[in-house]
Length: 272
Image (cartoon, rainbow, N blue to C red; front, side):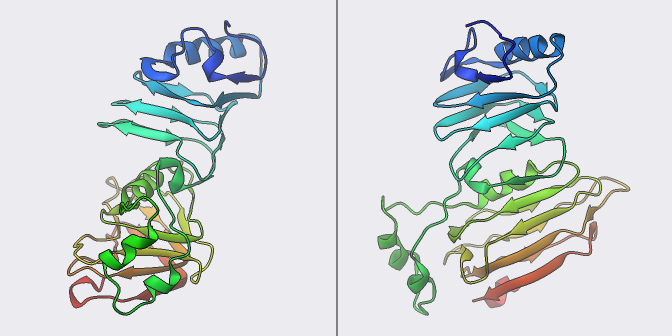
């Protein structure tokens, strides 16, 4: 299948595409985008279905192209930045893998992004364990199906870093996210970011015992810039660690807002 004029194209069907994650797919994507542009297509959709598709070349996907991810379709960003200026359809399933400094950046209109797209896990049916005053990591393990404690701080961080320059929402799901690494709000000019849960009784973020990290922070914005009005709302957050903060915002973060946020179990060293 060569590049076609159809507005809906499956990435895996393009010439030269390897769905096993070995070969760079950007030459095939570029060929398809060129065909769309020459044909005057104003609205197109690139479907990413079952398979792992490696990105090894810097590229900007134009604003008229929507990326449509299905479960099992994953872009592997191999030490390069893929910039996407159009809309994206994602869900509560992995869509991105990063190798070394690889990443995706949405440089368009505000979008709603999900940490699950970067591999976050919102564990279900663990409320009784979280509210147990004798909570420990070992007491939590039986609630994990595969017996492995998986953290979501890095996935939340990557979702925040991908937020478009005009702002956007990182939407948290029902359930419990465990974090052992810091999620940083990006340092860009005037970016309005909201981290939103579904409710303080339904979305939980927890730093387990033994951790020492800051759960959320903001890095210094570029000279003359600021992180405008970051908002955290509708979730419960707790730090069980022996050190580290819940929040740490720099002077470059203008008017951070906390709405319907429940903060609990803060240690003396992690009062944030």
